[in-house]
Image (cartoon, rainbow, N blue to C red; front, side, top):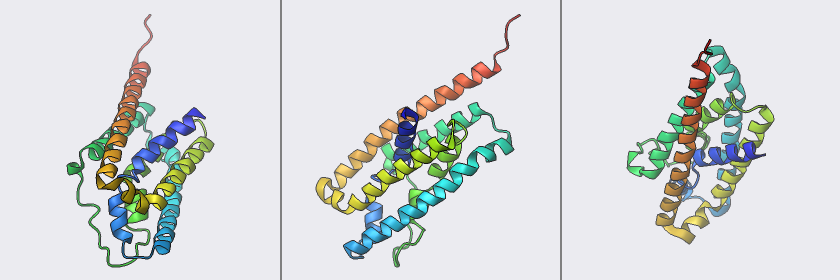
Length: 202
């Protein structure tokens, strides 16, 4: 259970639905409230399906590439670390969210790359090689996207309650937590590498 919960929290942080709240609001602001909810639910479902696809081919993909476990852990830690930096220091973000808002979003840009972006897909592919069973990974993805969907539905109300500064503070807090997770993953990868390369004495 702890593995499921910790993995779900990691995925939720990587998706960063709170941090993307202002951008999400801007994409659906011109639609009625009921339409906004239906758009967000639909896009969350598409992102969930895309994430599942990458999660369950990841284990076999890395096996085909003959990538070792320490390499997977270290690369995953690096990915999460740079994501965390972008969350803590928003000025490091690029212009990947500057997409036309002239029509109703459909898969792009909300489902992908905003919800199921390269970072999320890479994370689930990496985790697919580390979890003991697909049930754990599947359960974690469900929990993470359930929490994400709840945030998406509440996102319009959330900004009114805590304001833009509050959303920014929440994003930075999640970035700090994700930094800890990233460093822990890097340390595990380094430890695995040392243990796997040590030769028995005598």
